[in-house]
Image 1 (cartoon, rainbow, N blue to C red):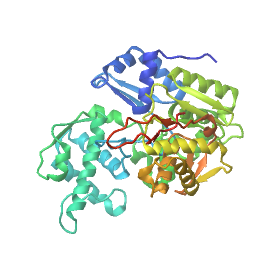
Image 2 (image 1 turned 180 degrees about the vertical axis):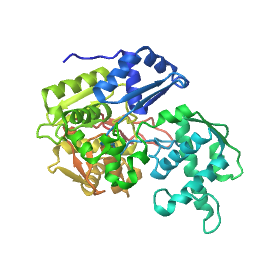
Image 3 (image 1 turned 90 degrees about the vertical axis):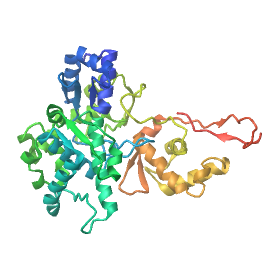
Image 4 (image 1 turned 90 degrees about the horizontal axis):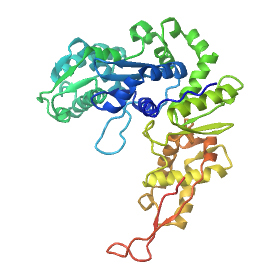
Length: 427
């Protein structure tokens, strides 16, 4: 099989699209021009290798990648931007409100926040008794507390911010003020073409999602046609060679790890010579690095473009705890590890380095869960349904961790010459 390498600038744009799914000419002109220069090459690459559609909207100056995955990662999705930190995943109510905002803006491309609140509240009031839409009450009256009304306004402001970050809409005033000030004047504008290009799935009405079990919704929404969305067609598509190929290759391009045995067939696609070669070619074309074992694939991006995870970098205590856990897991006797076992490990570390994790001295179980969450994000642990138990993946055998003591700081007001500072391990 011939290896297809993308131009370095085009590979950088492709990695950025894998993470954000969009490139704007206004916000990122360099990558946008790179995509325009290689539009046929990058469009064909996503379509033939990963089954993803790339749309280039010349009028709006927007490139959008529509990723279709039957196995949607649970830790992905729009994040609410806060002043500090990575931001939490947007809850379901905010995502529902974002869709309702798009619906209203499609009808009225320029609307005030007050009118938008009223319109969305009316739609929710009509559907809330059926359970199809959440209750959305924005006025503190008739049994609605001021706190509940303010929380509803905060949710729709978060939904508007998500659309604003996506480049779908424009806002002419401070949205945060509108949460507490009911009289704040804010106008929202949108472009109908941009809104139309935001959604790649078929109409939920045509798909009759309300008549299907929730477990079937993702597979239904990722179908490319109405016949392909039927349960029998979905099962046939997923079990076919093409379906297995796309599932495996999408994980290599989109996830920090891939399990060759996570396949309905006795021999997984990545375990075959053809699948292995094709997956390695895709990783090389994107500029990713794949560390491969017979039972595990670990995928990293040296540039940090394709993922917003920076493991193992960082000096925070939770990351140090995760690295300490990584050094222990290859020698763990069981296939799973519990929060109690991690806590015991941290207690042993603190006996040797009593100043490490001093802030968690009385809350080591909290640190244990935070460290495990770091490794879940990195693909080194899997959730099991029990919040205090995790499955160990073969990826832990690809890591070597070395812990070292940092150089003591100069004697000063808050530190003596005998003080030492334990630093995180390096992988």
